[in-house]
Image (cartoon, rainbow, N blue to C red; front, side):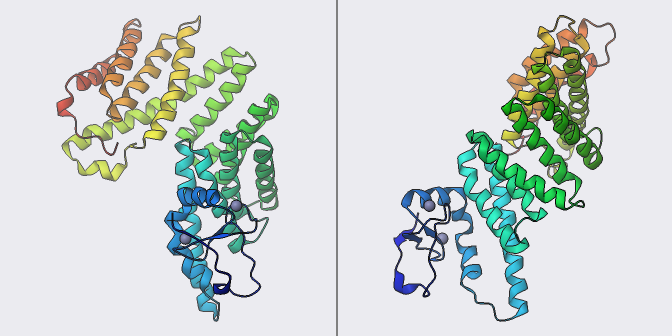
Length: 360
Ligand SMILES: [Zn+2]
Ligand SMILES: [Zn+2]
């Protein structure tokens, strides 16, 4: 972490330097770019780990140039848009790894540059607000979550053409906030909107829509409405079964043609896989405990988990879930999943015929 005390003479007159993270008076500056300032070493360290090490040098031209022409202005605008995208991606990936604290500097940076380019209270700030809300949700600061989400809501309200994907994400975040604060009816309304926008944007069978169903089921479970939970879980299981079956087909083809692997972008993201695993296991446990013992659903969900872990390269887990799936499906006469489950178990038993499963 390159750091030095601010040398006042080296700075333009009258420009008071503020901490990049908290906007308080700064005492330190980054000695690499010399255009970024901090109140103390702790904030510099947090910013360095969170985002600054990736954008330190990119900030130099943006923060040192004095604008002389329109051409320069548009060049800087392009550079700032690039920066916003980098910050957004970094914040997103830290959040998906569960590093909420570390996601804050990137999300804050994303918001600040978005305001620079698009102005305050604009719909273009919504992605940054949602990132900040999610990070603070993870940190348990519900007041801040509510504040960022109401800013996002306000920006969306003022801009009717803001796009379905943004509306979908906003309603999902609002729904999750209401779950935590215990307003279950409001949560249900938001998740219903979430599912509506997800269906419009991504289609009925998309995994984004499935995640909306899953979140809604969780609320109904809290209300003790188990038959609704069961039917929403069936939708989730159906969508994921379809999705994973397609991925598995692609993988089987890529054994013959390894090039296909890179074309289809198979799920090598471990954090995402862990999330899906948690969701499917929740459904599996629910169905196994349920007095109705819906064996078809147990077989389908366990088959999903087996495919998920086969694709993730964990053959031991794939074998475990595959066996659970087979057991359930064999109890149903002529069940149409028995054959694909057996085929998968066959693949798992001879791992040397399976190609390397990507970056882990
Ligand atoms: Zn600070
Ligand atoms: Zn720097």
